[in-house]
Amino acid sequence: MAAISQNRIQDRAVALGIDLGQLPGHVAVIMDGNGRWAKKKGLQRLLGHREGYRTLRSVLLNASELGIKFLTVYAFSAENWRRPKDEVDGLMSLIERAAKDELRTMHQNNVRVQVAGRISEVPDGLRSALEHGIETTKDNTGITFTLAVNYGGRAEIVDAVRAIVAEGIEAERITEETIAGHLYNPSTPEPDLMIRTAGEMRWSNFLIWQSAYTELVVTEKPWPEFDEAELLQAVSIYQHRTRKFGAVVE
Ligand code: FPP
Image (cartoon, rainbow, N blue to C red):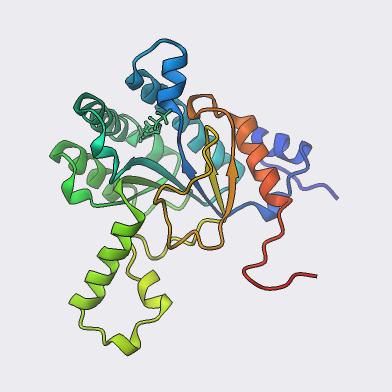
């Protein structure tokens, strides 16, 4: 019997053969290609990021309505500080504005907001907007939306090791669980599906500890053109993969 769906995106997913009972619980996204999208249109790179923000709004809503429980997006990497100052400043203010402007909608939609990254190093206005968002939505029970800002996967592991040392945990007692338990959001499950837009086949230091067994789907379209159909396509590709976690699957 076909699954009984709750809303339109679920109807469309079912029509595409997606099994709503086997959705990836945690989807992570490397939102790449904003700059190339803008350049192709003869626009400034920042306009690409602005369009990328619009895409993110709809992807969050779609992922939530589809029934995905965790969505994590790479908004600003620890390496992105190397970009021209006006682009860095523009991105910081765009993320700050988004955090402020979207809070009410996210709260109404039962979204729980988290961040990952060295948040103490971002501008004060952005940091306090993020902290306010986390505090306001902390008891929400819908999708958990994690914004990776000033995030680096290696830096996250360094920070975990520092915390472990600071707690005085003896070397012999350190296991993989100890490290996983000291990452930025230890109760967030590992990503099942990582989507990267704009064609590059790289991990770019994103969730490198957590992605050991994550399925990677790379789409050709740049992030500003990533839409509902692309999301459903990525989920469908994911559902056709056989996850082995290092074992043999007959
Ligand atoms: C990569 O594209 C994208 C980023 C470095 C920034 C991602 C930011 C957004 C999507 C803006 C909205 C985010 C929030 C949280 C409001 P790129 O510039 O590296 O593209 P390119 O490889 O084509 O140059």
